Image (tube, rainbow, N blue to C red; front, top):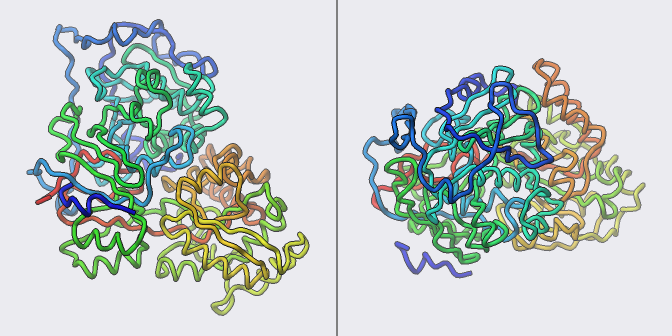
Length: 623
């Protein structure tokens, strides 16, 4: 693997009340023109009570001139100041330095698949997220982990019945190719993300047919439909009142893309450089597969004075020794997100060797994903529920946790422990498959697992292939689990280590027996956890081809239950069903840390992976 920078050193219902207050901001003044409904036919719905009836959305050519206010001058959005507690946040300054390039290390290359129908959107956005804005996005200028800011929207409001969010688009916002952002671009993005069968471009529609971004599936729990009210006003209706909608919508990656760029160049994906046109703080410069993704400053960014940097380079580096050397020599200054291909023990050692004055670690407040054994329920023996249960019983979680996280990770129950809405980690440690006896795997679980495997016909001598993608600790976990299963079941296992995007392709095609893999946990609520198990989730349609029919009715009840104790009981019931039959046997829910060189300033420790992808707020001292 060649790394050019080494040669060029310069080169939810119970979410806190504060969030509910956050979304109740006053919306800006509406434009005078009234357009037609732009929602797809399958999403059409009556306009909310307080919203005027829609008519026609003008074309891009008609809207090329900026809208005028009633005074005749161009309307100027007014930003709301966001206070930052500087005394307790490392690297915050009122006098940011401008200029310089920052090299970031990423744990894998961006996906080459169509973005909105692909498997690894979160990893892709670590490279290209700063090119785009979302409708709403996490605010990097506040310590409140669930605070949001408008991306292409200036403001938003919530109807009295809690069922309609009304967003006002920013005026005079421009794509990097010089064309104005319009309502048609927002509507096209929503259609691509949520109802791709309604896309008007045949080539794009056929490429995404039958596939939906897993993030979209989670948000669809809340999302009902949307429509244009006028050229600057978007109304989104939800299925039931919940302030979790905005958190999910901001947490997941929904970059607003140019409809004209897609019409000209085809499907939105990284190799299709003509579609890398956004409104974000940085503009696309270069993508060299497995080498670098480079973006440079957008001088017309909507936040005055930002971004501070001249540009950012994202380098995928996979081997731990190379990563450590790159940090020590300051060839890279930070990782692009919480995943760096270094374990927490690796990072702690690196910090000790570099010194606290050179490197700091930002720890996630909640696990950003869940990792373990993924079983292909369309292939024998994992097409049998007895075998899936046996794997969950046989997996010895504690050695995985000690070896790969020095004991920091949470035990891998289907739903994470340690939250007010779930159950305690002490309770989790006594559940079937999780429990130990005198520091060893509980013999009752081993005996039952072996009996189930024999009943399926998968006893000693069974030949299977065990796969991993060569990023983070997947392959390290695979080797430990391989040894466990060979000892418990007597299986003859061959292993296959896959390049990351090739692994995704094989998993989606169902061309594997079982593997080590992870699923995202983007915000700390049962609704987010459910995205790994629900019918029509990516896990069901493109990974394991299974969902638990007994657990399925509980997810909707968990979504809408307002009694805290009853909701907690529903979560426990769902977890019990998944222990009994599940195509995932999680080893753990990880603790992760973000390595940041102390020269990087204005980096407020984020809540999770989704919090930072734009990088307009950071600057670098002596880069």
